[in-house]
Image (cartoon, rainbow, N blue to C red; front, top):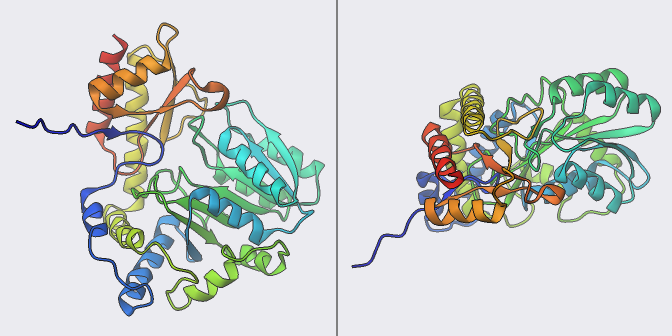
Length: 361
């Protein structure tokens, strides 16, 4: 008699688990993306994406990863030679600077120790030092270190001290951490489908306000597939300039309705509770939290000296069917990361803690 295949439970900070009803929706027959049926779906998606970002502004849907969305922001909002301030506190903050340099921008970098967050004072100091900064590149949740940046208060001081565009990588934050695009005065924010939005990878979403759209008109960097002007024009008729990932957008329609039904404030509270529960449980197991400003999306934990990452990971996967994420860069083998974002609930946190307890013993 054939044994049943064990379900592997995914607690990595992207991709994250997908609800069964979303998988079912994406299993339906494909439709034509230039049909009224698709436009009706896309109209709902566009409206509900505004709710997720807490904005009345345009939200663009791109068929690409979150990194593609980051690159799209750079090529649409700036020109070669423009100066931007980039906060590098981990792998993904570092990525902002690399993309900007690739396109000929002058990057002023604030380098922060991993596990720590940039302060308001550090931002103000650099803005006063460099009067020509045209954009500030922030990472709301630095996934590599599980650290949260105080985007709300930093945005306030940027506005008080400069005319720089406020640009946020919300890839591991949107749908998990409190975020008000309009109220906080953000100019552009990017997120992706495979994190708090409970979808497979393949879609990036970019919210833009009027200042960002005006910057698009002035940008002279080359762009074609990622040209925001084309996306904004197509958005007027609930259409896309290029062939979209139709199946993913059908799944997204289902996900966004789930989010609307639960309500953003409740979702933020759920993630707050899950992260607190997880950290408390980890501390009781004798583990040490890595970040000084822990995120509600993902928790980074030091690996005890008496065990290797390879042994810990093997035990979690083979004996408990649980996948967590390793550390990155210089912290590979020193920390591991447990996600608690998207389709995640109290039972999930208990399963991870129980598996860790057994693996560590």
